[in-house]
Image (tube, rainbow, N blue to C red; front, side, top):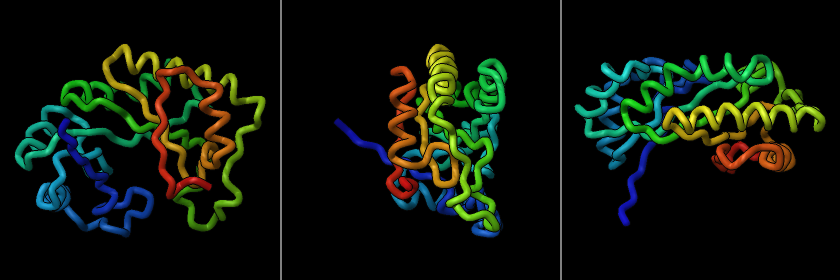
Length: 187
C-alpha cells in the first residue's frame, strides 16, 4: 500500500486572518507544497474553483486535489439550499477526482472574530441535534450520490467544537457523515 500526503494551503495563506500570508501567491504555495514532498493539496482562499483552471494549475506542479474546506450554514437554510451552495465545489471536486469535502457548520461562528472570546461561541441546544443531524445526513447522502464524500470538521468557535458536541453530532447523523478529527480544535 502506498501513502500519499496532502497539505492545507492555510500554512501559506490564512483565510481566517488574511494578513497572515495575504501577499503569498498561489504559485508560491503550490511550488513549495510540491518541493516539501506533498503530492496533494486542499483548496484554499486563493484557489480557483473552476476545474478547467485549477486542474492544469495543479498538474503543472505535480499535485492532485485532495479535499477542501466548506463553510456550511445548514442551521440557517434548507437542505436544498445548502446542496446548491456546495454545487460548484462538488462539480470541481468530481471533475478533479477529489474524494472529499471538509464540511464545518459556521453559522454564528466566532472563529475569525478576534474581538469575541471563544468562550462566547454559538451553542447548539441538545434538542436541535436530531433535526440538524437529519439535515446534515441528507446533504451528505446527496454529496455521496454526486460522487464526493463529506468529512465533518469540528472547529474552534463553532457550534461543533467540544468532545460532547462531536458525540452529539455523530449520534444524530448517518454513516454518510464522516468525521475529521482535529485535536488542535478540540475544546
